[in-house]
Image 1 (cartoon, rainbow, N blue to C red):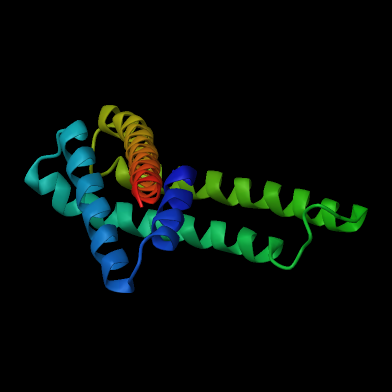
Image 2 (cartoon, one colour):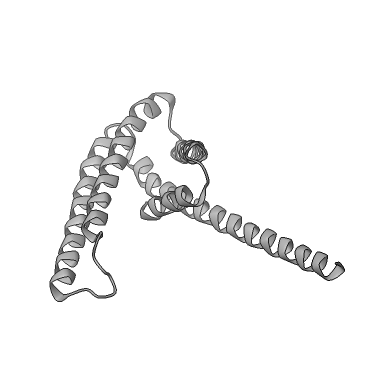
Length: 162
């Protein structure tokens, strides 16, 4: 799930207008919901109970990661002092422990809504979604690069003809 956060940030940075970003985020979220719902085989009753708890879990996880990013902000990562390194290592360990505690808590809560088999499938579905999203972004970047090269070639050909 860490990569998804990074990918989403990259999507926000790379797209143009805020409205486009919001629309892209909605599409990504819809695709994630569809994939997870399908992979877990959620019944309508399970889905109704599952998604609010899962969204809450993701929100709390984002907050933990934001806290770590905030701790890193303003620190020159290339010229860390020993004290800064120690603080960041400690903060990283604290973040991982908070994430683990959060995962334990929400695994218990989610297992009241879905089976343990579905809970196990959830981790795989999250991982698969991240990989699919990464591949799609890489494919888009490759396509953009190819389009840029074609544009440059056309311009060079036009310059030669003039």
